[in-house]
Every structure is written in structure tokens, then in C-alpha cells.
Image (cartoon, rainbow, N blue to C red):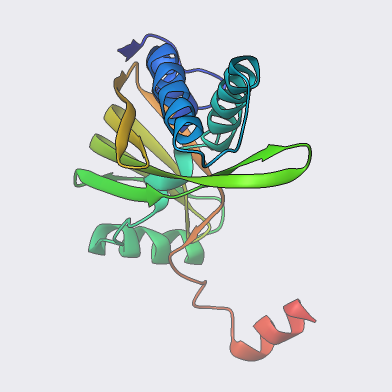
Length: 205
């Protein structure tokens, strides 16, 4: 799918949103199989159906985390970024845009969902989420010695979700149009040369 406008947040849940029904069906199949194998005890079909719905909601909630920090994860500080960090640290108020090489960032996330009936945990389902983000045409905004923003002109994200060896769902998105991701307090690249250790210690006091 292609995001024609940025959602409120690029999350793993959003990336897999086009496959929610597939995820729900696969989770229901896993729950039914566990019930037939006696892992969940003697449960009625109605309770198993309710458990499947809760599993789907819980899984979606666990995946509701922002993918934005992944743009910063694994980012190698290039010589150009380091130079911009030094320049802006020594010249407060200045801003530099640095063109960065394309990056491929991957992450593995392994949350778990407990299946409980009447407060008793009967089983735990381990989820495996893998996300790969390919960044191209990337600009870094540097000021005060920090990388504070990533301006992305082209970005593709792919996600795969597995549970108990079963592929629940997958998703791929072209994140368009270009967007800007603020990096919180920023990634420190350099400190001002004029700031001595004594002055820095005094400032922290």
C-alpha cells in the first residue's frame, strides 16, 4: 500500500492494518488448535471465539509503537554529519542540511500475549515481528551540534508477523509523500569547542 498522507504516527500496527482480518483468522486458528490439543482445558466454542477476538485486540495493541525511532537506530555518523555538528556547535543558531547515504534499518520485536480465563493464565503466545525500513534521498537537519530531524523523500517499510511458527500477516508500504521526522532531543554530534570541561561541569550543576 502507499500512504498518500502521513497518518498520525507510522506504527507497526498501521503497516499491518491491511491484513487485520488475516491476522484475526490465523490467531483464531491457533487458539482453536490449542483448545483441541487440551492446552486451554475444556472451553466452549463461544469462549474460544471470545478469546480469539481478545487475542487480535491484544496483538494489535502490542504493535502500536512508532516506527520513527527506527530511522535513528543504526544511523552511522558520517564525516559530513560530524563536520556539520562541529560547525553548528561553534556557531549557535546556525542550521545545516546534510545529504545522507541510503540506509536499510531492520529490527526484531518479540512481544508475548497471555491467554487467561477467570484470571488464570493457561498459555502464552510468543509473537515475532520483523520490520525492515529502506531509506533513500535522506537529509539530516543539524543545529546546535545535534542531528534534530530526518527529512525523508523516499521510504519503504516492510513488516512480517509470526506466532508459534505461523505467519500471521505481512505488510509493505511506500511512505509518501516526503515527510520530516523529529528526533526528540536530537542525536549529539559535537559540543561547542568554546565550552571547557569546567564550564560544562558548572552548567550541569
